[in-house]
Image 1 (tube, rainbow, N blue to C red):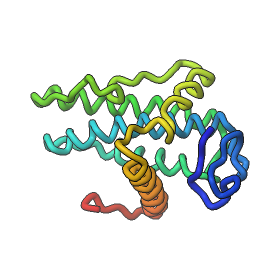
Image 2 (cartoon, rainbow, N blue to C red):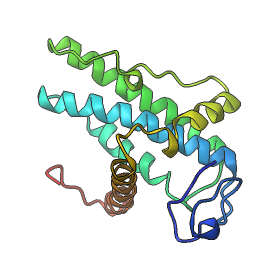
Image 3 (spheres, one colour):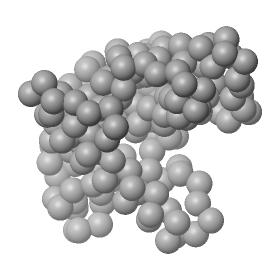
Length: 173
């Protein structure tokens, strides 16, 4: 486990065994693999938009799923399994629509071919390999920027999820 997304982190550095907030290791790993799956979905969604292809359900799902990865949202590990699988299903659906429109994505990018494990334990192991410390970066500043952007996007997802609950939505935003 490696989590430093809130002000409660152990010693002001990071939680590495369990979260000070109460988040257990398995949930942290499942949140990491969900973010990884959402990253693949976002690559497919971005390319689909360039081709004029949209999927409102995937957009709404992405907001809700990313919001679920915030600290102190919900620590039920079983909750993340269907979201991980759904992210991959939406990604694959968009990839199929891109191909049908004559487009193509670089399938050498592992995140576009990622397949979730069939077991909770397997998903936890996948999360251990896809978390914050696994992100490639040229140097510490670039890595820090990637993490800051991820946390900012998670915050935006929280606001967007609440807006959707209230019936407010603006695709232009």
